[in-house]
Image (cartoon, rainbow, N blue to C red; front, side, top):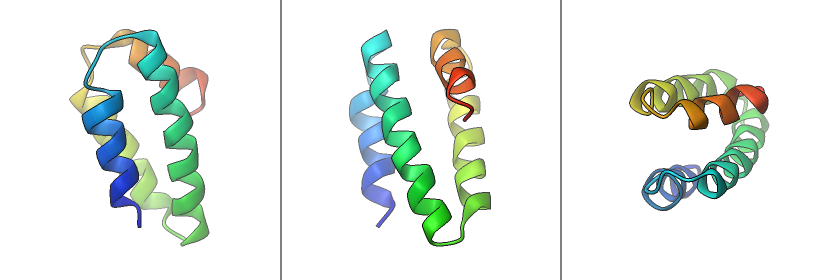
Length: 71
């Protein structure tokens, strides 16, 4: 159920480095967080966010979007 969100975020949205893509990624991540919380897997979502932060550490604008969204 959650894998399609992750695939969409990683392969389509974060494939390009522009602010529009980052906003779309944050929107999808909010939906993904809600899905994780609905199934009682908050830790899984936090781990995924940490993975994204590590994987995209050289994209400060993306990290700033995550920070601004409280992710």
